[in-house]
Amino acid sequence: MRDYLRQASCNTLESAVMSKMNVALPADFYIPFLSLAAKDRKPSPIRSLLPLEATPGIISLLAGKPNAATFPFTSLSFTVRSPIDPSRDVPVDLSQDELAEGLQYCETAGVPQLRNWLTGLQENIHGRQQGEGWRLSVGSGSQDLIYKAVTAMINPGDPILVESPVYAGVIPMFQSLHCDQIEVETDSHGILASSLRTILESWPANKPKPRVLYTVPYGCNPTGMTATLERRKEVLQLAREHNFIILEDDPYYYLYFGDAPRYPSYFSLELEEPEVGRVLRFDSLSKILSAGVRIGFASGPEPLLDAMDRHTSTSNLQASSLTQVIAFALLDSWGYGGFKAHTNNVASFYRKKRDVFERVLKMHLSDLAEWDSPEAGLFFWFKLRLGVSDHEEGDSERVIRTHAFEKGVIALPGTVFLPNGRKTAYVRASFSVVDEEDAEEAVKRLRDAILDARVKSVKTE
Image (cartoon, helix red, strand yellow):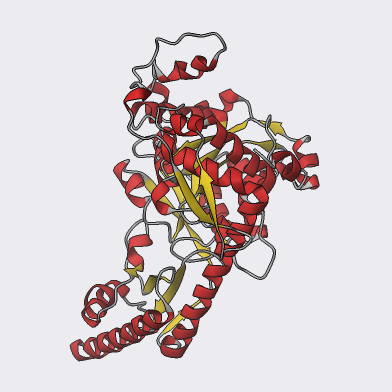
């Protein structure tokens, strides 16, 4: 926490003042939001006691930890690009204590030093102070934490509000629970609060309302949309009026490259509400440090995090201690200022990739597709003009899975992002890893595939 005190002064004064006016929802408020499985799951008899080992003077005979003397690792060091001068590599060494901690089991919620650093980050970036009824847990990527949140809050057959199109990775979670996925419409400005309001105000009186809304507010996968400030405020108001929790999945928060100032997160905005505690936020280091380290973190109401940790303690026990201490060593060496500089560099990198891909789209597909330019994330979401009749949208799946693949290009048909799997003319294309030459060739091949599909469609009519 080398520059925590210095950087803490950067917190938004307005948020700090407002936080004193808020009331954190009490712990028993969340009981109706927990699934039957979460209520039945008991704390691990071993892991629930692990934090007590840190008590001064305690001799622990508690856990079946392997003896560190048997571990073959003796040192670990690595180099990273400087966030201030990316042309320069900087060495980072793990101390013997840090390495020892990384080679052993840790607390279920994560290595304490990393949790403390990330808690400071949430204070610094989102203006959320400790003592507001929230805390943070580290998981094996945000997907791991989202899955545990879903199983902790959703019973089989429950209705759940999902923006549509939605991240395809969560659809199997809801399907496995046989959830009634209630699709909330979106557009290029994010989730449509008007659609959400209509759904909730017309909900059958004899049927329990959904307790959860899932949304990706920045650079949404697949649409690339970013929810506006007005939309976010309206959704928060509806959460209070209709009593649901917002699952704010935000892996692209730091990949915002729009011209306007970054909109505040739901986690930050709820400080403007009379009560705080209706947002469970998910962050990821995958897009900004490394996908392979598999580190994500959830921030939100303590009772919900407790339920998720009980799941972890009986499934994978914890996220990898070693990758956690490696991540902490890196982040601690940067400080919050260095972290911001690095994420700004990452966002700038993807803005250039976006610009290149959009240039080739305009060059080769302007007459065959339509799209909105993303302001964050890694994706273009475009609608193919397949030459079908005005009353029929067309089906991109047939084009992508057959014609495009035969032409040597692959993307994702939009139907995989629709909770109920209906056909659509939309396609998701990722621009994150292709260079300019491959991007142009890919779009050329996609153009040929669309034209080929249109010809064949005419012949079969």
